Image (cartoon, rainbow, N blue to C red):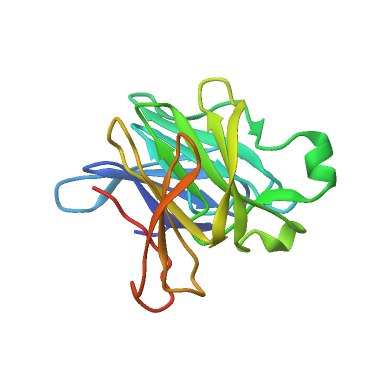
Amino acid sequence: IETPGCALVFPTGPRSFFSLCANGGLLAITLDDTGAAVRQERVPPFFDALGDPLAEKPVRVGNTWYFVSFDGQVHTVTAGPGGLTTAARWWLTTPAERARGWRSGGSQQLAVHAAQNRLYAIMHQGNRDSHKDPGTDIWVYDLGSGKRVQQFKTERLSSSIQVTSDAQPLLFSIFMGSNVLDVYDPASGRLLRSVNEIGTTPMLLVTP
């Protein structure tokens, strides 16, 4: 299946996916049971691929993906019966915070708790090219309003986070330059415990 000018695969169902495109748009592809592409639809640009590109590591709630840009704007993509739609953008930071260089970063910089409608982001201070840098701040947002509702500091540098999906979630944090897994209570930001010797260069956290 050719995807000219577009890359990556974000599944939208058992027989469909979308890709991010270099012009700031999307390419949606539907497959038949043999795996052949039977429909291709291009979505007009919804982000500035040169001025403020997207990090390619979104989080997903149902049929909606939340991407964050290098400068800290949240962009949403929703897959529905009529195809892909995008929504109004919102910022992780205030203008004053952006002036001080606050932005999200890391290998797995976002996590989400669907039932509580909470988005978690690793934050640090740096320039646009620091979008993969770790941080020691976790900022928490209400997805309904786009407002920040909490923030706390981590004991160690964090480059990847993940949140469990149960009613009393745990937040896991790792740094790719360490082999320690930290476990936090996201409601309070308190470090509950640490697990040593989890491996070399840990980068990806996955929970059931």
